[in-house]
Image (cartoon, rainbow, N blue to C red; front, side, top):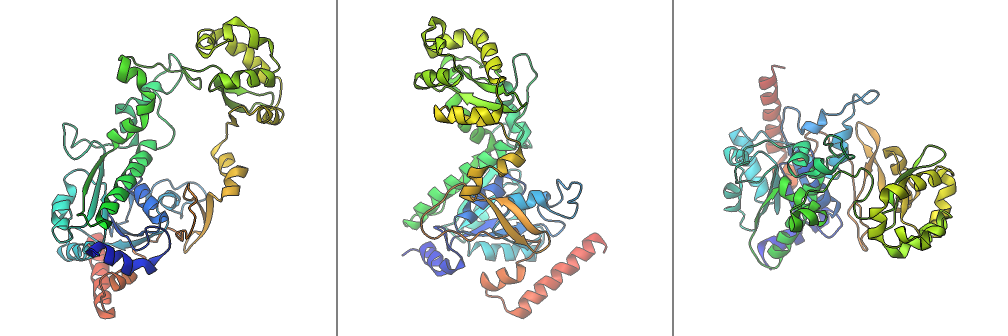
Length: 419
């Protein structure tokens, strides 16, 4: 049994889930890195979030809004089931503590600008020599090398450079961005996949791996299945709004009560049932609409007819009709409606957790349900909440050593802030 396997087995008591016993040293903040480590935490890993003493993760102070000025809602959404300890990596002693913690970790995740971790003394070369089975993942906008290496990248920047904005909107409209940080999230998902693969290799007796994830690459990879025209034909797709360039009907339609319903007739198997649902059986024999390519050609003729049809009934009337014919459809929900959806409630996707300061908070849980033991999900941490626990459990420090460290940190913060 190799060293990592022994350590993981020793740490199994930390929690449930298939990653029980895996320790993650999380140097990331905001979304991409924290989303990655949240996935690992949901699978049972013990995630130790390293935060700056002067305020911690930037999300702790972002997004405060009326009625919730004292709550870290965006931080809560991205950091469940983690432990927090403050370390100033520019301080020699704190950096030594960081090295000691990493020596007992299995994974490191960071999303600093390329080169920053090396300057701080916590890069791959600094840490892997003492822990050869370490899996180290760096997430950045454009990767660790290349002409864009030094460029700063947030989600909208990546949406722009990867072409996403060029296909969002309607014909003739200016470029638009997706109204959610999907480049960050997708990068986090890919990073978690790479980490799991590397951990599997380590558990089989291999050495650790260095993983370089580019948000640009991750977004292009996610877009790849819809880039056939560009990849094979050298053609840029246009903007089609809510319509599908290759399928008709495929659009959102306004109902009699002002709601919107999204429908897609994916292939010929759904065409006749759709015609029955909208009570236009005459369309079935209409030569203009007999095949999907023909319906695409005659999109401008068919679309206004269908808009009039859907405007004749309310959403509540259309839903059972479309369900009966098994047409792929859904109501266009707001965020609040999406969270309250009965299927979401049935699966328990939205979890309620007890937070020591915010009280009851709601978070979106893991999207998958796994048989057997599941990881226990707990509230996101207060800043430096688990310092004493981690120093005791990870490093076997005595109470006196812990108190000296905490006292030194308090003094340092007071000196730096003048308080």
